[in-house]
Length: 261
Figure 1 (cartoon, rainbow, N blue to C red):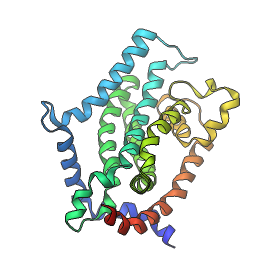
Figure 2: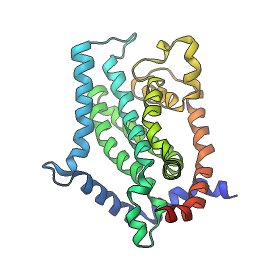
Figure 3: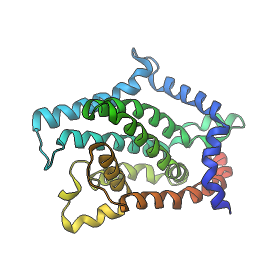
């Protein structure tokens, strides 16, 4: 029963503490860009500059070609933007409880909303960036799909963020090892190459990698590339498997979290 109840609890938390969440988001955005000329605009400019650099390297300098009608730079950028969101959210989730520890050391504070901060902020930022890039690459008609992609991706990351926030606090070594792990995961995800270019002996990596399924659905929805129902059921099954237990784990660890910090 606790696990079933936990499926809906994160969404209830967002609604109940929505005003506090917005205040924390505003505080976070200001603290990350204070003292700069552009201010919070840097949050949008930084991923835009990354994309500009990738475009110059891949399209102007290297001129890499892919088999089929989709240009490599378009394929790469459409996969890299969601990947940047995923990696940013997961990396920050590992330290989010410690980052905001000062808030709940001094007062009664609903720490249950803290794992949502990296998700909400990144989703808002990448909705803007993704809309601009997809609009330029595929046309205005593709922008609603791009917005839906980022929103669904943010929802999919919720249980992982609750799980990572606890693991990152109690097992410090994960924070040291995770940058290497996330880099390996990127190489095993069809971002720098198409799925058909993966050696046949490595196709198992596409099956066990839920992010590969997500990328396949993104490219199918926006660029009309091939997909199958396994691309839907595998990440959805993982989400359903993790959402309840990750919530229960977080709530049970909450007293220890307050003691540690």
